[in-house]
Length: 206
Image (cartoon, rainbow, N blue to C red):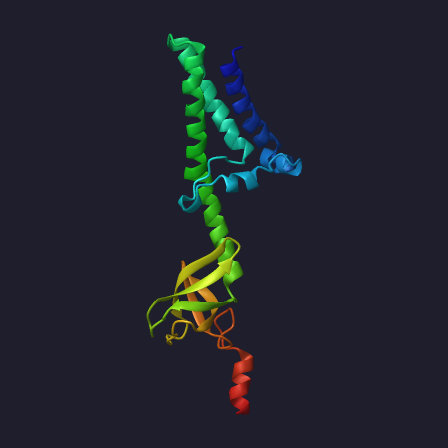
């Protein structure tokens, strides 16, 4: 068996074993995480391409299996069908496998992860206070800056009661409408969009 065929077999067998073990161990990724073999996440983050949001060193072992499959397939095909020497075959097969892994990681895995993180961020952000960085007009949109698990972010924002908030004002995030924050005066609405009983009581006592 050639090296390329061995890579192909391993690249297919490992995900297959992951599926077979998923009912017991949560998949191979979960098993490797428990065994501390999936610790490349920090390195993958450090190797990411800044604002472009591209990662060049994926941490998932299953993605590396995709590289094995692609490299093995290309290498085995070139070995059998072309007259290239072994060095030339490796020079073509390895970049091809790496390119396939990056395409899967940056085109599929990262977008899914970001969508999951975005949803988690929204749940964490609701109830927080945030500064208005672009004035919110009556019935219109402005912007607020909030801090979630992924760091600081700027969201378009509208007032929950159609009121106006000037730039620099502190507001409370009470809800999200899609990716737009719904804000209210601090103490004016609770995180469910209802009147704060404490504020109502103050008015009654007055």
